[in-house]
Length: 237
Image (spheres, rainbow, N blue to C red):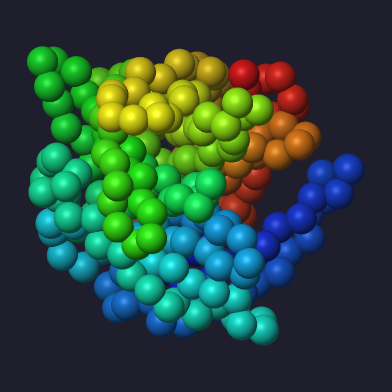
């Protein structure tokens, strides 16, 4: 999804990793709102994580596909009093995934407790927060910038996330608790020494052929084309 252009991109890859692109304009995005994360919910519906507007809460927009466009039909607020930390207007809902009738949201804002840093992982069902977990971060500066999840054979929800900040780029894996509780992730892959802050990973997805990460091509100015990083199966465990 484009941050400020109100457009979603449906990207298909063939077996030679050649891309096929379809652009879907998004109607109904509020003014002064950046689109950050996206999740497929099924039946022509998507969720978008946003930032911008005002301090005090993060937001999820629900849109449905209508012909060749997407139309926003619902807005879900995630107030800071439920998230457990102050939420600034520019650190909102950065990562999303949809699974088992729920939306799992990763918030970019971070908190600290006893010298450890954490980010909220939020479970939303039927338009309301049902659970908030503290995800213990693995660096002194990284923030969550992307999220995907899948269901294991036993019904548990497994998640894949990006923690990054310039020289920090960690791909994290974790299992969402069935009830209340904090989350301690595993660093599945440390890309810091490889990309050394030169690439800004903004999205990630599990596929049957491995993991795909989306690179943001704009920091102040556009630096080049948007790109995908494709990791072969088994590289990100």
